[in-house]
Amino acid sequence: LNLEDGGSVDLAPFMDNTDNQNLTAATLTGTVLEIEIEGGTSVSVDLSSLLADIQAQLDDHEERITAREECECGHVGISPEENEGFVDRPILYQNIPNPFNNTSMIKYYIPQTSNNGNLVISDNMGQIISMIELNDKGYGSTHVNAEGLAPGPYYYTLYVDEVLIDTKIMIVQ
Image 1 (spheres, rainbow, N blue to C red):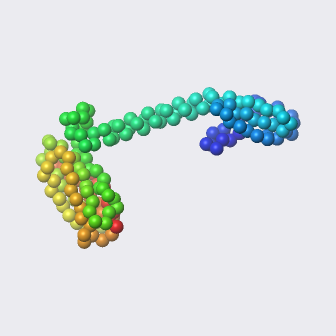
Image 2: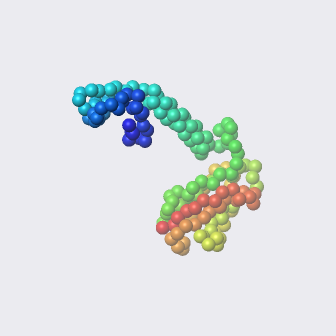
Image 3: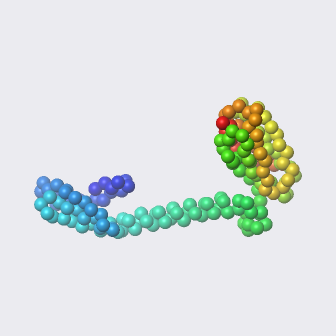
């Protein structure tokens, strides 16, 4: 028996294969699958062990997703001193909104121990459109104006102490 969710149940132990009776109905109530066979015969199959395994897998996946979300997002907007265990490293965030047709904001984080930061914006051919010096340490943001930019993809790259940290893509409409 194949289930809609891709699972299956082996009904061979419940069938003697000596008659030509057809399945007339199958009903799932809670964890019990009731199978009605032509001629009034029915068989009940308890699926609780199968469902318990699936539920355990779902619970495990949910715990892992929650742990990743906390790990990735737990420090956003909080200074390193306020978030114990946070690795003090430069961060480049995705611009908001993206795509955009007027102005977009790019957020970043530059550690206090860094000397300098630059944000380089280039077009799809690699030509530098703008280079912005980032003099403030900690969390900061800058705005990009789409005026004079042709619609299409553009790249922005964060350099801290002349080391490439990250590159993201933004779309001008």
